[in-house]
Every structure is written in structure tokens, then in C-alpha cells.
Image 1 (tube, rainbow, N blue to C red):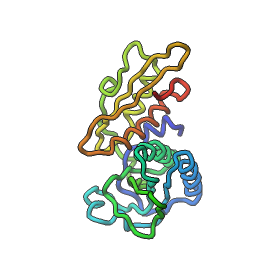
Image 2: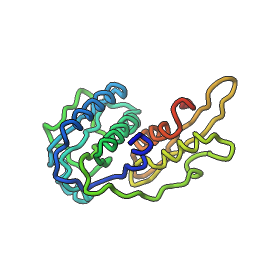
Image 3: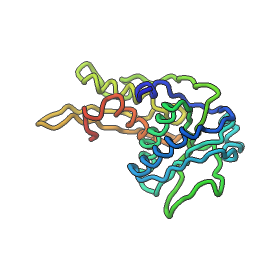
Length: 229
């Protein structure tokens, strides 16, 4: 499947089959992780065949089962770390979906198992991403409307609406969708601009959610049609 199809097919999955990742898939994932770490200045790590991180009380509360493979989403502490984690991490999520795997972004329902990951000086873990062969393909959830999360109208170009529609399919913490996209027309020979904003949430994770949504927007809108303001 292509990226647009992967966006539509991807749903959060919390229950997995007791099945190791195929070696050819691991190779593709590792290559993708290397690229995302380089592009995003991150320290994402793939952990395989390790069950302890999702066996605690929080994991049971989150209804996770048979999670033995996951991504440790880490990087050097900075104000934009969470947004970069979201933006580059979602590229790995969609890569996994295209490989026939399932995923789930996990903010709290995991335990940090010593010895399973490496952190450099001044690095931190932002979240985990569960990974594997899902018991199901997950289910879709109700989303906000294009009008609720953007200034799309009859006068904005079709690519902008397509970008917002793709962003509405992005995973966000408890489906909060606390983002907004604003179209600014091209003028004076300059390209059209898009402003991506987040709003307040008691739950948090809005910076990470925004990074995920921005990548979805780029896929739907086409990166050549605009520049981020």
C-alpha cells in the first residue's frame, strides 16, 4: 500500500499475536529507524522479544496484551523534542503498516525495563510505540470535522482540504485532536503558507500530536504545494 492507503488503514492496536517479527521486516524497520534518527536528531530504538515493558498494572489498565516488540522513542531534551518524536515516529508507524504490522502510540501504559535501551547524556524517553502482528486491525474512531480544525472553505485549494482530512486520521492522545491548520494564500511570488497550531489540553501530549498531524498533512496535501509558516 502507498502512504495514503496506510494512513486510512492504520488504527491503534493493543492486542498482539505471540509471533516474532520476520527478519526481513526487522531489517526494513532498522533502516527506517536509522534514517529517522538521522533526519530528526533522535535516538529511536527497536526492542524485540521483550515482554516485561507491557506486563505491569498500567499496561493491563491500558488493555495491552502480548506486546513483546516496541519502539523506544527517545532523544536529547529540547523544547521541540516531542514534536519531532511525533513527526518522525509516525513515519515509522506508517512504514510498519505498509509492512503488514500494527502499532499503537503509548504515552503512559508501559514500564521502563533497565538494560533494554540506551540513553545518551541529556537524553530522555518521550513515549513507546507498541509494534507487532495485531489480533485485529483495530477500529476507526469518530473525528472532528475539517471546519473544526482548519480555516478550509470554498476558496481554499483542494490540496489544503486533503491535507486536513489526512491530519484528522492521525492518532492523538485519547483522540483529542487539539490541532488547527490555517491556510495563508500565496502572494508576491511567494508560496502558500500553512500554520499548524495546537491548543491547550489537560491530558498533554499536544506537541507530539501536532508532529504526527503535520506529517499526515504533508502526505495528504503534498509537500510541494506549500511551506510551513
